[in-house]
Image 1 (tube, one colour):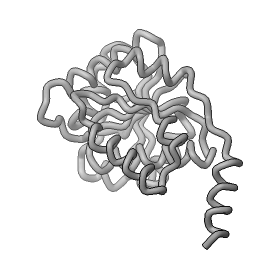
Image 2 (tube, helix red, strand yellow; image 1 turned 135 degrees about the horizontal axis):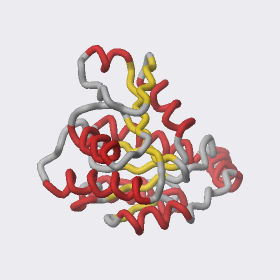
Image 3 (cartoon, helix red, strand yellow; image 1 turned 30 degrees about the vertical axis):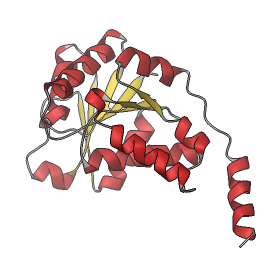
Image 4 (cartoon, helix red, strand yellow; image 1 turned 180 degrees about the vertical axis):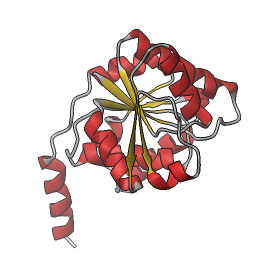
Length: 198
């Protein structure tokens, strides 16, 4: 992987562990000569991540819709700021420019980005790994819901099990480097057969 895209909060969160994790992830990216792609903001965990990476000499690319730049939340000291029109275009650029994705704690925007990459990987629109950095158990309830979706028949077990999760950065990155996309044929046939037996 040459560039990692990180999804994370525009807020700091309530625990110091979240801020520490953003620092540590930026340091890991620098130590492994990777580039950083992120949402381009100068607030919250996004600011911590970008500032730490920039201090270490990392190439930091921000991607931000014009509407958010007009709200004065954009980081002004990045290696490159790419201005787009929409949130959808932002996510498309993130996918194009990145070799892997990491989700740190965040809010609805982070959940949206995380869900999109999971869906892209399921449909083989993208074969790039996504890792969930589960700091202080932040994503525990979401992961529990994934299990619920499997038990209710809306998420396939193999797709849930292909989600990469760790609370330790080196372990998460090792798993991401070993990521193997799932073949799409069998589960498509299964859902067709399921629908034909109504």
